[in-house]
Amino acid sequence: MMEEWHQKLHNNTSPDDVIICQALIDYIKSDFDISVYWKTLNENGITKERLLSYDRAIHSEPSFKRDQKDGLLRDLGHYMRTLKAVHSGADLESAISNCMGYRAEGQGFMVGVQINPIPGLPSGFPGLLRFVLEHIEDRNVEALLEGLLEARQELRPLLFKSTGRLKDLLFLDIALDSTVRTAIERGYEELNNARPEVNPSSSPHPIKSCISSLLF
Image 1: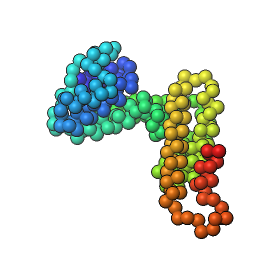
Image 2: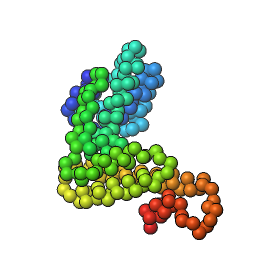
Image 3: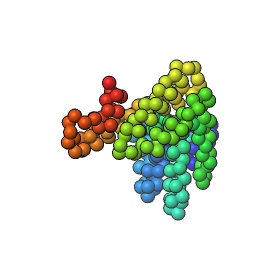
Image 4: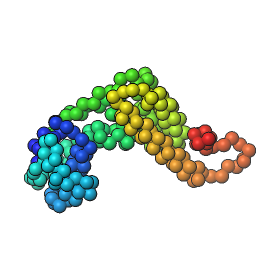
């Protein structure tokens, strides 16, 4: 099965490969229960007929030795990140990697993947995106929100230009927008948990000011 999947990956990788990879991981974690493999595939719309319909069809079921378990999980876990970077751009980290360029050497028996950076991005854009990723878990979301808003402003003109990588740019914009909403929710949670202001006439909380400027 792995040789057949390799042939498909070399010929024409697709979003189905993310699901196939997850099905293999679930199958191995279940102590090689083949019904778990098919359950993951079928729940995501991949049937035996669909596997056979690929240009490089997958005819066989996976069959591994138990002493391969740890190595397989490690290699497939690394490869899942690569596949998601290519096909599941709504995730912020993978969307950024897809636009900035990404190279992954083959892990174990898996094939390598290289994604070229999108040409013509603003000079300060990579640094801005790195800043966003570095602050993605901050409890104080003020700096994160400012970085996210600036990144979307830098990205906006590129969305109106004709480019062969428009899909990647759109996925990045969607991921940035989703992260803005998540950060706003986290900011409101912090506000709700904060102590009441002693002096009502004092300046508003900086997070509240930042959120208000985004909303209004």
